[in-house]
Amino acid sequence: MDKFFIKGAKKLLSLSRTKIRLAEEADTIKTKPKPLPLVKRLSGEKITTIPEAKEYIQNIELKSPTTDYAAKTVLELIDIIEGVKYRFEPPELCVLLSIDELKEIEKKAINDQLSINLLLMAEKTSRGINIFTGENPPKDTWHLGRVPSTVAFFLDFAFQSNYFSDGLRLKNIRAVKGKETLINYAIYCSLKEFGAGTEPIT
Image 1 (cartoon, one colour):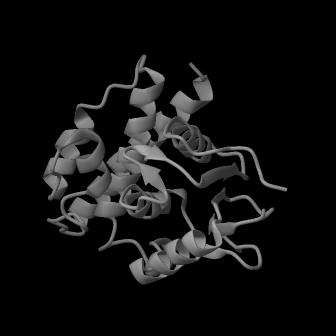
Image 2: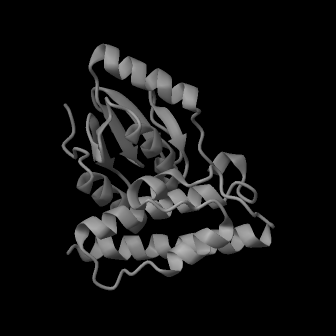
């Protein structure tokens, strides 16, 4: 298995532990939303509190995982990170798009038969609808968030959309890797494992 994928997953696991500790220090009790949607969808577990999230990640094993297990784990970890940080993280480091804006994006994609280009700190846009994570979004993109874990918010929406998914298989979504970080790479590989395309449209 790709060692950088696993290193990225382990880095996310470490980051999730840090975010949970910060949530505890901020006297956070509940996750937001509750239950955490990707964890529930992918593993059937209903995590609604910080202690439950802490216990859940203690059981994650990443010494020699299969590719599908690592991919599922990565998506669950970004869900946990986003779900516990709302009381201590500044708003500018949280999700920047609303559900209504995602519905607007979905409507346009359906009407114009377009794909989503999920730009993971990638500056080059392609034909379709471009959704960006990172600082300084390129022109004519939707700014999802400044940190990679905000992808969890979009994925929760995508898994509920018949246009963007078929069960747990993503469709009409393309992952575009930009800045080379372990976390970005782990998310990119996980999106690919769940069906996202990776070849840019020119």
